[in-house]
Image (tube, rainbow, N blue to C red):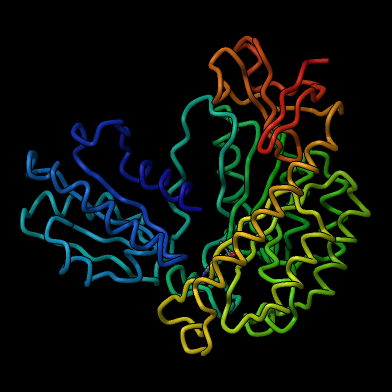
Amino acid sequence: MNEYDSDRIINSLSAHPVKNPADADVVIVNTCAIRDKADHKAVSAIGRYKKYKISNPNLIIGMAGCVAQLYGKKLIKQIPHLDFVIGPREIGKLKELIKDIKDSSKFKKINTSMDIEEIFKVSPYHEEGKINGFVSIQQGCNKKCAYCIVPTVRGSEVNRPLKQILEESRLLIDQGAKELTYIGQTVNSWRYEGEKFYNLLDHLQELDGLERIRFTTSFPRDITSKMVKSMAKNSKVCRQLHLPVQSGSNRVLKMMNRSYTIEWYRESVLKLKESMPDLSLSTDIIVGFSDESEEDFAQTMQLIEDIRFDTIYSFMYSVRPGTPGEKMSSHVNEEIALDRLHRLQLRQREITLENNLEQLNKDFDVLIEGASKNNPKDLFGRTSQNKVVNIRNLDSSYIGKIVKVRTKEAHQNSFVGELI
Ligand code: 5AD
């Protein structure tokens, strides 16, 4: 989501990104407020750019995103070298805002309104020829999860019109994108003028030149039989689903206000796997929420044993200002929460590797994306399940092509494969 917003920021200014901050006219730190750590990181990042402003007083420094939205004016007061803050819904106004600052050297700007009509107006910057891209289909969130700051900083759910989604997809495909990831806080609750998410998948399948469709994040309560059917029948829809469960305990899910039971979650996974046996599942888990007990945590550990996710993003609960969670008592002691997090991550690492080893000597369609991170002579691509596969000594003419590959080595985070 933030990567997408950063690309929209670049486009809204018709800017050319530079590698060295000393060469920039404007520095914008795009921020995330989801956890305490991310929000501290944002403020210290702004601190790092102070020296550039000292050597170039015309440099404009701004903060965008959810931390800017959350603390607005306070940041401007606290950080003298910060020229502006801008919330996630105001990116369309960035050009105007920077012009105002340039026209008046002492001007400080705070743009954090939620009441923006055209929140999807600016499309993201897309590097010509890049194989994958993102398209936002939804802003904000209507779920009221007790731990989550997103509804506060991104506002309530606004679904993007179908026509705009298709137009932006077309634009990216014409610039060379073969794989698009459709993003939103709870994408599968998307609906617009009578069309639902499963219809949207049908429309996307029709896009000429688009090879692969991914989407994230899905909300468990909004997994419907029609959605499962649509995923299974549309050949461009990748066999990958990110389905945050947050906890394996019904007691904790209820405190979190997640609106589904663990039985519902397990049932949905069964339905998905029945229709798509090669579906790769990932999830998010928060440990130490409110008064999570050892018994609650044991249920989370049991869940990962049973489902055997390919990837888990796990976090220690971080209390966020203004959320219902802030008022809940009995926070789990930090040492205990950290210990649970380590146990979860340790076991998951084993499961991930075991799952990868099961995929050894199997054949996959791999979309080649570019030079491998490990060796510039090799190329890498991804399977439909989003697994990274490195292929040795492959020439760059394969970039953008889907090739048949047999896996020959399985590692923790990637495979090595050969063309077949
Ligand atoms: N503390 C810890 N993790 C959180 N997440 C969201 N809010 C919090 C919080 N207050 C996690 C959830 C979510 C992911 C994006 O971040 O697991 O799915």
